Image (cartoon, rainbow, N blue to C red):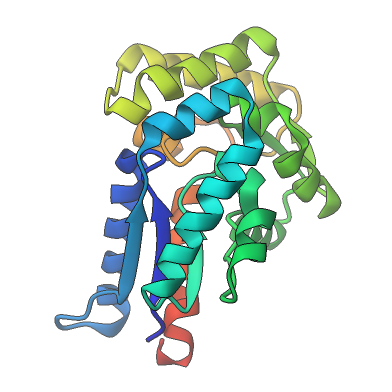
Length: 232
């Protein structure tokens, strides 16, 4: 089994979900008392959020590169960055270490190809929905990416940062997300992508009118695939 390296804490609410999903999958595949061989570097989200809000992506690149080096030094065979938004720093991470980064969009692209889905509604932080680093990667794979209109993008972002990352799960917010997902489906989205690792804590598959793909689940499953290799 290869050692999985996790860069987490952004937020720890979803990082805890990564830990559980990865270990559950290893036990399901290997049986008995098997669990994942992994190391976790969980950063303090407060300075990360402040740098995001201030637009200091150079500072965030440096922070993520250092975290990646810490995880590599702990013996990780490959890395996962347990957040969609911070994949804006993927290039800085890859430049800082010798072990590979399992990009969160890779298993998403594979799942979309398997389902023959070419148009998605993208939900995530404002950074993920509006900046190019995530959308252009999907568009380069032939995926048509739809995002909510500005007022809805603002509300999706607010719910993530004011509620989900601090462990608040509100029924009213689930209703809000359901309405936004319904609008995206009506605009032509063949699936909804939860491109924020916390949204799956709020939204359930039956909340959407079209297939719902949770990047947290897909990323964790891909990590186990990579760790077990021919041991599966």
